Image 1 (cartoon, rainbow, N blue to C red):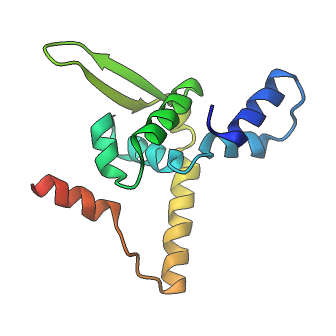
Image 2 (cartoon, rainbow, N blue to C red; image 1 turned 60 degrees about the vertical axis):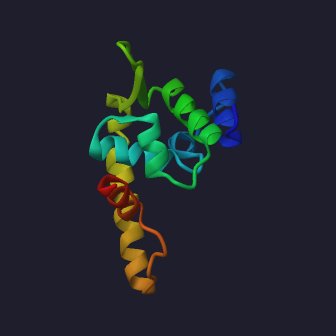
Length: 136
């Protein structure tokens, strides 16, 4: 388990030494890419691993693998293996993951408003990168 916050929360839950629901909620998002992954799965639908790699060009293969694994362990997403001539693995948000979407949407809106208030021009847009890849 690579996520220290998540590990601490899980250990305390297991030992019955836990009483902070806000911390539990935040632990579901802890990890650099989890909120972004959850947002895209909840907004766009299922993604394959390589599609997520292209969507998040700064994530490493190992980090994405670990964060997807942890999200699946927490019941936020499911991993589907579609066998055929070529095995395809897709990731989808679960009902539990969907229940976090109002929080994720509020965080997205807050960030958009804050960026506008600060008059910051983003240097990189994930959507632009995805559009660029689709055009190839």
